[in-house]
Image 1 (cartoon, rainbow, N blue to C red):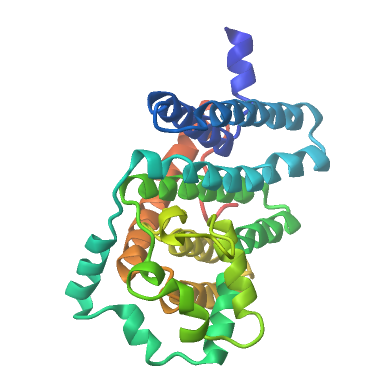
Image 2 (image 1 turned 90 degrees about the vertical axis):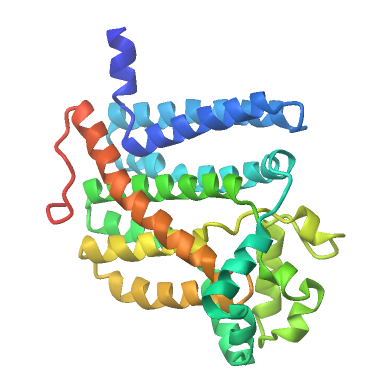
Length: 316
């Protein structure tokens, strides 16, 4: 028993989040195995990822060199992406109905009309090109924050940032389960003619195709609204970008001078480019506040449990 406890204590807080979340996902797969055709495959993948979490934690603790330190942090990147794709095979079979009608009604109650239609009136190819490029940097922002922190050898701040980011991503994924939706580019606009209706300059169409492929609707997909990923509420782009912006400011990283303006444009782009309703952004902001508030307690609870001092923003 003591050896098992010692083995578990090698885990960092972000490892614990990964392990717990994949146990939950596996339980959901088993519970709904009659609806999810690929449940056995994904359950096996989840077990592998849980094992890898323990493996990287153990190897870092035993070797304590730059290679294993880096590997322990960066294994999280593909894990988050794999989880996003795993949800694609889970949400639609389990959560049959989308909530877009509710989101549209809330936006209209707040603004009196559809915000994407309002922004379309000020659209122009230069602005569209800029915002589509910025929108495409979403997954790069957390990685860049990590690189900035590691460059300064701020390892405790890095531990906390990775934890909050992973925790935040997984909270947003739970939101997709509860309130699935497909977004205004399908419900309020014509997805098939978006390149003509909201044109860019040189890269916009190409970048849109990359986003579409990532959401399981590559070019030529029949009935894209039926098969696209259900991932609009809360807006993960808003939630995670706000977390990166907040961390860069509270950790007093010089990177804040990059993240704050780029992040602001990215959040604006989510509605301008017809990916999200405004209520998605409000939901993302609320989820961000909850993630930061609850996440700090969880992070410090685990650090106390493994005999490490609590994290404080101004200290690390």
